[in-house]
Image (cartoon, rainbow, N blue to C red; front, side, top):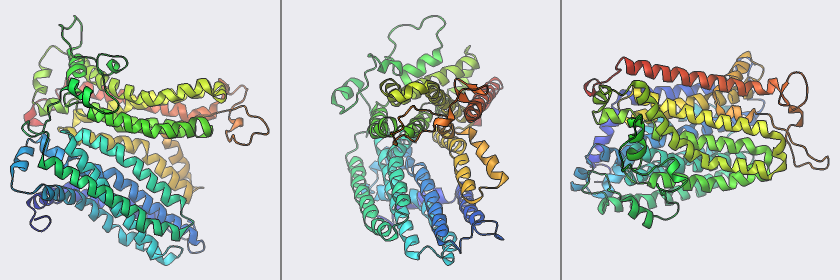
Length: 564
């Protein structure tokens, strides 16, 4: 009943594995990972001599494993977050609960079906990594330990995503919370594997005991939590949409509570309108801000804020106060949080109108496409930017409290500009995907894919090129392409600190600032080139996307729900 004769599992496997997307994803996944091994392989003496330096083989296998691990951590929620939340969105959740199938069989079927495709991707790459074993420097036990860590982590990530789907009625909310929980765990595992690369036996022992044990405990606990929620569903009788009383929720909720009538909560969550709108008010903006966002409660926002703040406290202490040269890492964390939380408020702006079949009616009103677009853009951007700003306040506090930052006010201003542009880009890309696609879940996943491609892919190519082809002209070109990434821009912002000669704790580059003809605010022009390139590219991209959306709305792009 749980595996061999599970109707939920059989139905999900037939639906998921017979789509063209599964074959295309398998091909692309294999090609990318095979290309990594191919270009790092010694070719006519032009690449690294891996046979003469066995450590390089270990580095290659580690790079292959870590790359695959990060990809699996990013893909697992996209496969599993909609397993139960999708049933609620399709209004089939009650039918599933009313069937004679046991809750354990339902959860098991959803989990196995969601992870089967990902398991195929993982096992299909095993022959590729085995090609590296004859080069020496890596034992088969290390490879098997790495795949054990990968498999255990993927099962745990899938269970986390399925559990999030049982708590939320929208796939977008389940996806965001899944990423917020999964990414810190994935980063810890990546740091553990990379930091212990010189201690092979210790790394294998941890890989065989700690990681599988932790994954098993968390997976089993969440499994029974999901089964309990399906056995006694709190959202039964409302088509999978749990009715939330915001006043009752604020009284019973533990931790942070959103009060819509108080400052600063009303900045991004104004109270419901009880009067008529004033003349000249954009009705789209007013409606989006006051009625749409918290229709299903504030659980997702409370979890996102509380988890992010818990992670931000140690990062803030280490990066901004103790080891101040690591300040760009904290800015990268703030940008990453915005990447995760931003699309959920904009990716459904237009697709939700299509799903409710109200887009064609909306476009026949006197509201212009300009009003419609900026209303939806600002409403989503306002929420995501305010939530992300909670993590930016420690930067301003550190600037006031730490004297080393006083001489770096322009650098701090560059950090703020990078943050603002990343917030704007995330919202506009999400709105653009919402205009193109018909489903909110598809729009959200496409937004994450585009953002990660723009922000992380250039960094990955740059790292690979500088590691294996440091003298190649292509590597220089790839390094210039990193202007698309706010992470690269943050790490290229020049910083300067006045320190005593006896103080060896500061590692900031004091030569990156000087007074001369080729300087702006004391910073060399060549140091500001990367920041200026990022600003220019981001502003140009946002303008092109917004103009494209205006043209599509003016031409009634996919207006009717029948053509969507």
